[in-house]
Image (cartoon, rainbow, N blue to C red; front, side):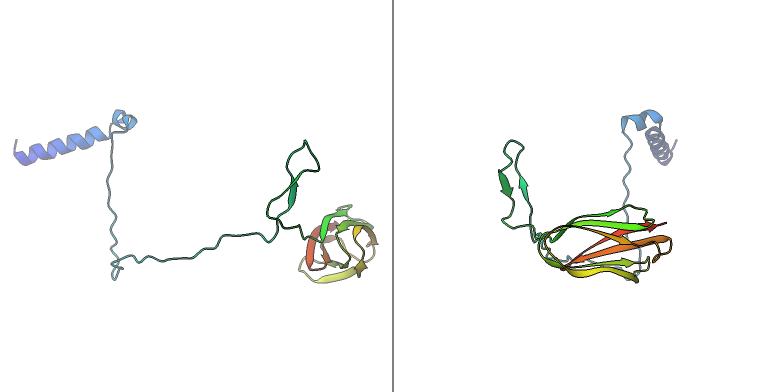
Amino acid sequence: MSAHAAFVTENAMLIKEELTPDSLKKGNSKTVSKITDTRPGRPSEVKSVKINITPFKPSYVKTIPVSNTNANQTKNMAGAVDSKVLSNVKVYPNPVSDHLNLSYFVNKDSNVTIKIMDILGNEVATLLSQRLSAGEQINSFPIASSLNSGYYFIRLIVGNETIIKRISVL
């Protein structure tokens, strides 16, 4: 046997030995590969890019209770106060058949507008547009004759805040 044949036979045995199921279980098989860029006109050097990223900082932080042991004890996370004017918006019943009930809480005297929008965002009706005092507001609107059956959106605008709720009309 020539030296070349012995070398080829020895390499073939090593390759054969690496692919046996026992060696795969032991984790002895190692594959080394190198990927080269064969594109014509490829870039010879990778240039680094420096980016300045500023972290997100919320404009306000809520005041939350620290523990259940003392209800009066609170923790202010950043010294700011919650500035939301509109909260606790409820639309019922859903699906709607004849009357739409809308309840919400306004934190300060504000202009309130309630509109019904179709699926495409077109204004169908304006239910309310007036200045209301602070506190819980409950409104009921008859809609049986004014809307066809389908999906609509209620747009509640208080000051510069807007909340949109979806309703289904039977």
